[in-house]
Image 1 (tube, rainbow, N blue to C red):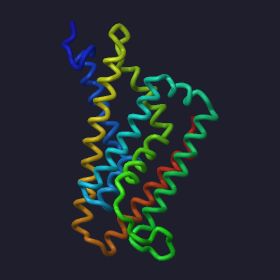
Image 2: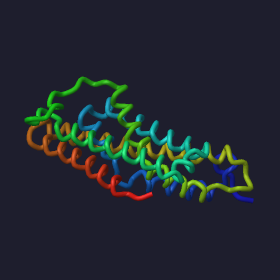
Image 3: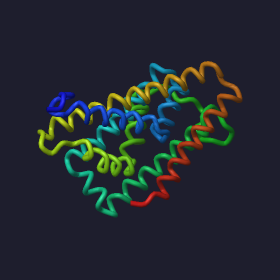
Image 4: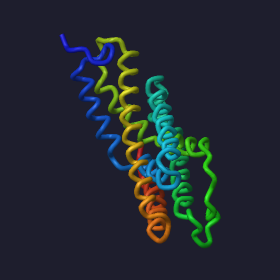
Length: 214
């Protein structure tokens, strides 16, 4: 009999998923770029709100997968394209905002915005929730760690909880690193370079998503 890990999930299977969750969360992407941009713009404490928003987006995708709606989106060309282009447009817009941060000449977003935790969290949610490739990835990966002879609900709960905990830890780490870098730069050309670097990262993520196929 397998050693028990989380409820109704074998310990060896859970450790395998834990390793996969770390690999997925540590891989660079739009979520990591957003977490770092929040840390750079708002510091660690306030920027962590963005990391929580990212987890709300992950939770949305997980809920769709568990409910079976994710398979419908992935199988429907129209639904997939609608979500994909919403994600493309959002990432490009977010990149433009980041590029224009800190009074770059000719940009509408040149003035620093007051901190609004709802806006920061909502933007984080949108980064992940409008990523159909993340949805398809979860559809492909999660079933590999499900034991069909055990109750499904506790296994899904363990998998979702593990993925959210790991991703939150990683995104908080990215936020802290960026906050530290911003504190060291304290404005000036280095800060402008970081702003534009993150802007390019967001727009590049949008272009990659635009070129992705179902």
